[in-house]
Image (cartoon, rainbow, N blue to C red; front, side):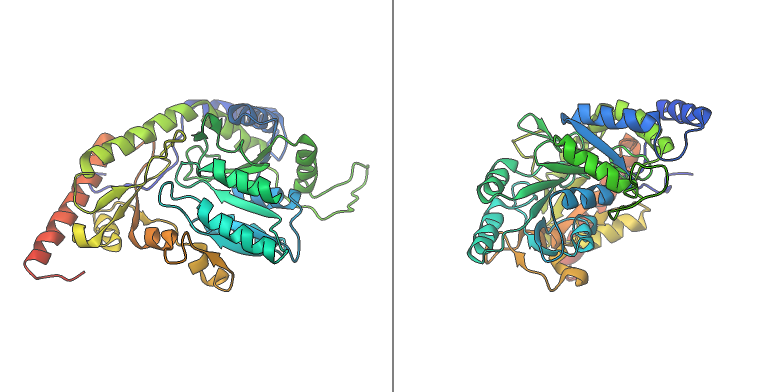
Length: 394
């Protein structure tokens, strides 16, 4: 393949236990939804997160959808949601006929701003239109500052749904991501820290609510001999085959976290002294998994924009991406209300303009990472020199 083989952002990292468990699922002939691996995966994930129950489903989006429905969200309701996120955090709000309101990030964690949330809740209370739920997203393997966020939601009596798709294994003051709100959703998509190729998990301490979600996720079929349906349901259950893969992945989760943290540490050691580069802050409130290593580029100091750096990496056959484009900037959500961190400062817009996510996979070799680092150095040095000579403009 040679030095120019493709370096991916966050590829799947498979081991041997996944193959053994998958073979056992084949041997049992339980390959469709349900089976012993589904039950075991749910129990093992719930135990790891520190919650009473879990429901394995087809995607993290499905888990969020079910969590919001459990929160009572329906047509005409309002749901607050982090703006700096992937569209899957917000789409389930529309599925349920509700109206999203987007909340900015804070600089300290890149996650939901308590300052913006408080302003939004105050406005909603004055209008006597409090949201049915708040979707708090934990970005890039780091939890939001949940203390003040949970306090605000409790003060106003609003249900918290954690979008923990990117933060399995992270914690907040000793409590695992996904154990802090009333409901939480994890994703096991191919690029996540562990994967089932596609899949997700809804977790909660409310076992009665979880059984309702389990019922909805299996087409809401009533427990009678024939096919009887009194409620609307979904085809959301995870297959026994994919659950077997998930069980094997979960067994090496701590190893995967340690590997991604080492990747981040090497990037920080090699790049933090370069002018204009700042890494996503490490919150003092808990462990960050560094699912993705994310940084920002100050074009005036670095001599290069985030987009130009991503282009340079692509020319070297290295995949890098911008940080998420905020939901309030998406055409789909342009008409919905947005609360910036401060009236004069939108943190998520600043991060989108300057943010870059670097290859961060747990299987990334030191040689591959050195190639990424070398390309970044060459890009910044070359552009700065060209700028000094008056050959380029930012």
